[in-house]
Length: 244
Image (cartoon, rainbow, N blue to C red; front, side, top):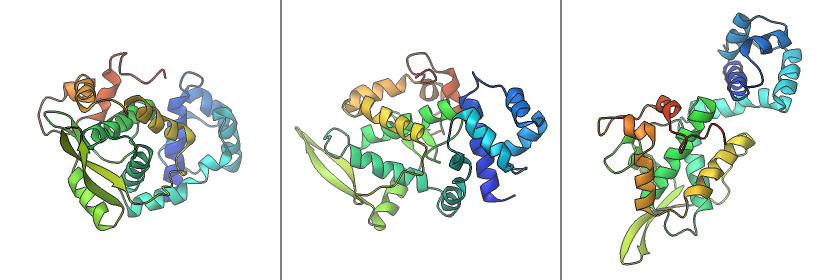
């Protein structure tokens, strides 16, 4: 099984789930003139798509045919660096909020949390390729300090102590100006921007309280435990993004 074939199958499944209200798995299989078993093999990367099937899928899902051909480069990068998405999206966020003084570490952790969990609710898949753990005050990226230290060593990230009214806070800054997330599909970039736009001006207290009532955080009982991403499917209407 090639990396490309597996990645393309993953994208087919992702688009099918996103468009579940329009097409069932059986309906898509019928359009492709295959059975459901064969479609499952395609989605699992065990059977390659034919050119005519790629054309039909692009029409069904209203996407460019390149969406089923550009995945090879992305997946090979991920294979060599499992943190590729996390680091790029982190640097993108830091550039976007550089002038926003209140986005220090506590707020940043929650931006990352909502980006990851909103993405999982929407696409049934990870975006950042990392886990989050339940801390008493907030969800945090697993081994975040180690990732940040590694990025500092590679001159990708800088940490500064910044004046924040009557006390100081630690803030992270991207040391790279040109962050490439063009490999992400437009709807995923929109999801990232929606989280930034919603929360960038929230205080640490406000966003902490808000995250505490999100179902994945609430339902994870043990402090220090990994927060199961599947719990997003039990979110209340106030937190769910499935209809956004």
